[in-house]
Image (tube, rainbow, N blue to C red; front, side, top):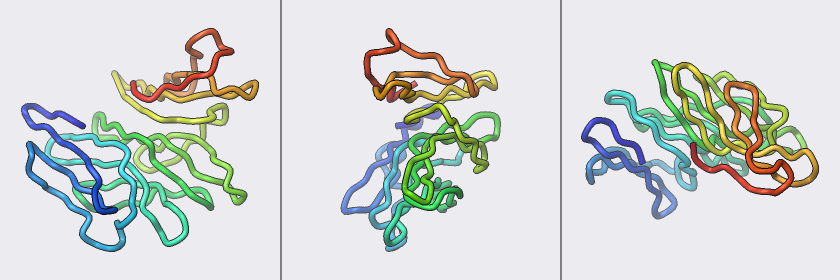
Length: 173
């Protein structure tokens, strides 16, 4: 869900395809088989541009990327499944968080800034992203002792939430 002025945008999925709605009217629809089975994970709006984060199914793997106004752009990196988990748009820059996978299908978490990947080596999951006054906030987990510990990164430095030993997750910022 995203709101821009008085307009409400909703990203939804049905019949193995995605759609975007503006004020109850469908404005984009995955009509090609290229988008069948694709996953939508987030939405951001800037002016008349609508950005959707997710992954496109490519036969045997998922490829991370975004749709801008219904047009797909793959975000490179990795050798296995990759996903964009959330998206934010600020001051003309598109930010996205998610993961790519190495050749053994192990996830590597990080952030794309206008499609350029930066790994967050201490992350064990990144689920949400927001930008405010030039700072990038990313919510997810670290896993120092075998337990997923909630954490929020401001730019590239993270702060643990809770007591630092009890498991949990951060899903929205």
